Image: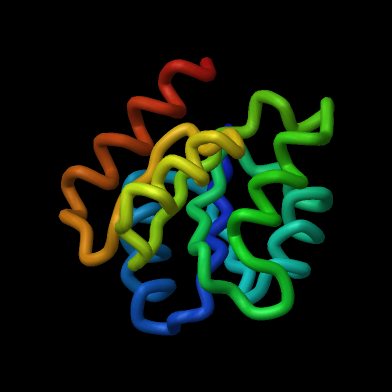
Length: 124
Protein backbone atom coordinates (compact mmCIF):
# COMPACT_ATOMS: atom_id res chain seq x y z
CA UNK A 1 0.00 0.00 0.00
CA UNK A 2 1.31 3.44 -0.95
CA UNK A 3 2.40 5.77 1.81
CA UNK A 4 0.23 8.87 2.16
CA UNK A 5 1.27 12.51 2.01
CA UNK A 6 -0.80 15.56 2.82
CA UNK A 7 0.27 18.82 1.17
CA UNK A 8 -0.95 21.79 3.23
CA UNK A 9 -0.26 24.90 1.15
CA UNK A 10 -2.41 27.66 -0.30
CA UNK A 11 -0.13 28.56 -3.22
CA UNK A 12 -1.57 26.79 -6.34
CA UNK A 13 1.75 26.65 -8.26
CA UNK A 14 3.58 25.08 -5.33
CA UNK A 15 0.75 22.62 -4.69
CA UNK A 16 0.79 21.59 -8.35
CA UNK A 17 4.53 20.90 -8.40
CA UNK A 18 4.54 19.16 -5.00
CA UNK A 19 1.58 17.00 -5.98
CA UNK A 20 3.31 16.01 -9.22
CA UNK A 21 6.60 15.25 -7.46
CA UNK A 22 5.05 13.14 -4.71
CA UNK A 23 2.73 11.18 -7.03
CA UNK A 24 5.67 10.49 -9.35
CA UNK A 25 7.45 8.92 -6.37
CA UNK A 26 4.45 6.64 -5.81
CA UNK A 27 2.83 8.36 -2.84
CA UNK A 28 -0.90 8.78 -2.38
CA UNK A 29 -1.48 12.54 -2.13
CA UNK A 30 -4.16 14.84 -0.75
CA UNK A 31 -4.17 18.64 -0.56
CA UNK A 32 -5.39 21.10 2.08
CA UNK A 33 -5.54 24.83 1.32
CA UNK A 34 -5.87 26.11 4.90
CA UNK A 35 -5.01 25.09 8.43
CA UNK A 36 -8.49 23.94 9.41
CA UNK A 37 -8.74 21.75 6.31
CA UNK A 38 -5.25 20.39 7.01
CA UNK A 39 -6.34 19.18 10.46
CA UNK A 40 -9.56 17.72 9.04
CA UNK A 41 -7.51 15.86 6.40
CA UNK A 42 -5.07 14.64 9.05
CA UNK A 43 -7.99 13.14 10.97
CA UNK A 44 -9.70 11.62 7.91
CA UNK A 45 -6.79 10.66 5.62
CA UNK A 46 -4.18 9.98 8.38
CA UNK A 47 -1.16 10.71 6.20
CA UNK A 48 2.26 9.27 6.94
CA UNK A 49 3.78 12.69 6.29
CA UNK A 50 2.51 16.29 6.09
CA UNK A 51 4.23 18.90 3.94
CA UNK A 52 3.16 21.97 5.88
CA UNK A 53 3.39 25.63 4.91
CA UNK A 54 3.48 28.09 7.80
CA UNK A 55 1.52 30.90 6.17
CA UNK A 56 -1.89 29.26 5.80
CA UNK A 57 -5.32 30.88 6.06
CA UNK A 58 -7.54 30.20 9.11
CA UNK A 59 -4.84 28.42 11.16
CA UNK A 60 -1.12 28.75 10.54
CA UNK A 61 1.31 25.88 10.11
CA UNK A 62 2.77 26.32 13.60
CA UNK A 63 -0.71 25.79 15.09
CA UNK A 64 -1.36 22.79 12.84
CA UNK A 65 1.98 21.20 13.80
CA UNK A 66 1.31 21.82 17.49
CA UNK A 67 -2.15 20.21 17.18
CA UNK A 68 -0.71 17.16 15.39
CA UNK A 69 1.99 16.74 18.03
CA UNK A 70 -0.45 17.09 20.93
CA UNK A 71 -2.52 14.14 19.72
CA UNK A 72 -1.30 10.64 20.72
CA UNK A 73 -2.81 8.93 17.65
CA UNK A 74 -0.74 11.18 15.34
CA UNK A 75 2.50 10.88 17.30
CA UNK A 76 4.28 8.93 14.53
CA UNK A 77 3.11 11.22 11.71
CA UNK A 78 6.04 13.02 10.08
CA UNK A 79 5.78 16.81 9.66
CA UNK A 80 7.95 18.77 7.23
CA UNK A 81 7.64 22.54 7.44
CA UNK A 82 7.98 23.83 3.88
CA UNK A 83 7.91 27.60 3.96
CA UNK A 84 9.25 30.93 2.76
CA UNK A 85 9.86 31.89 6.40
CA UNK A 86 13.56 31.15 6.72
CA UNK A 87 14.70 33.10 9.76
CA UNK A 88 16.43 31.14 12.50
CA UNK A 89 13.74 32.00 15.07
CA UNK A 90 11.00 30.57 12.84
CA UNK A 91 13.04 27.47 12.09
CA UNK A 92 13.72 26.94 15.80
CA UNK A 93 10.03 27.44 16.60
CA UNK A 94 8.95 24.90 13.96
CA UNK A 95 11.41 22.29 15.19
CA UNK A 96 10.55 23.03 18.84
CA UNK A 97 6.87 22.43 18.06
CA UNK A 98 7.78 19.00 16.75
CA UNK A 99 8.45 19.34 13.02
CA UNK A 100 10.73 16.56 11.77
CA UNK A 101 12.31 18.85 9.18
CA UNK A 102 12.23 22.51 8.16
CA UNK A 103 12.81 23.33 4.49
CA UNK A 104 12.70 26.85 3.08
CA UNK A 105 11.25 27.92 -0.25
CA UNK A 106 12.52 28.01 -2.89
CA UNK A 107 13.65 24.43 -2.44
CA UNK A 108 15.55 21.94 -4.56
CA UNK A 109 13.12 19.22 -5.62
CA UNK A 110 15.75 16.45 -5.39
CA UNK A 111 16.57 17.45 -1.83
CA UNK A 112 12.91 17.57 -0.84
CA UNK A 113 12.16 14.15 -2.32
CA UNK A 114 15.27 12.70 -0.64
CA UNK A 115 14.24 14.16 2.75
CA UNK A 116 10.68 12.82 2.42
CA UNK A 117 11.99 9.35 1.50
CA UNK A 118 14.45 9.44 4.39
CA UNK A 119 11.72 10.33 6.90
CA UNK A 120 9.26 7.78 5.55
CA UNK A 121 11.80 4.96 5.23
CA UNK A 122 12.53 5.38 8.92
CA UNK A 123 8.82 4.83 9.61
CA UNK A 124 8.54 1.41 8.00
